[in-house]
Image 1 (tube, rainbow, N blue to C red):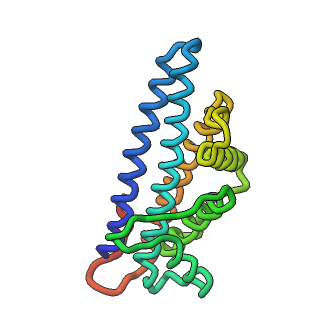
Image 2 (cartoon, helix red, strand yellow):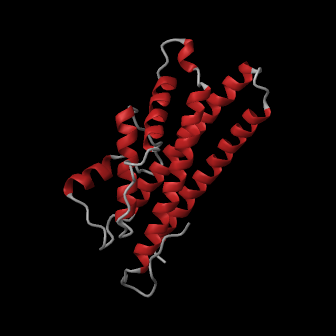
Length: 203
C-alpha cells in the first residue's frame, strides 16, 4: 500500500471525533427543557461551531490528501488546478494552517476538495450541489459568517430555525463524504499501480 493512501485514515478520524462532539451538543439540547432558553442558546451555538469544524476538518483533509498524492499517474490536474491545490493551505507540517473566510470561499473550497480527492482516486464523483440540501450548506455558511463577524450581540444568536439547517446540512455533508469514499474505492479497484503493492484508500 502506498503510504500516501494512509492519509485518508487520520483525517477521517478527525471527522469522527468532531462528529462525537456534535452528537454531545445535540444530546444536551434534547435534554434541556424548552423554557431554558439561555442554556439552549449556548448549546445551539456550540453545535454550530462543531459543524463548522467538521466541514473544515474534512475539507482540509481532502485537499491535503490530494496534495500528497498529486503525482499519481492517474491524477491529471490542469496548471490552474495545481496552482490552486498548492496554494490552498500551508502544507508545512511544522506550520499552523491558516485560511481567510468568506461565504463564497467556504462553498467553493468544499466543491474543490471533493473534486481533487476524487481525482487522485480516479473517481468521477462530484459534490451534488444540485440537491436541495445544498441550500442548507449555504445557510450554514451564512450562519458562520454571522458568528465570526458579529457587529452586535444579537448576531451571536443561533435560532431553532438555524439549528434545523445545521442538522440537515451536517448530515447531508457526512453522507456525501461517505459516498465519495465508496466511489474512490471503486475507482482504485479498477486501476493497476506499478510496484508489488496495490494502492488503496483506507477509511
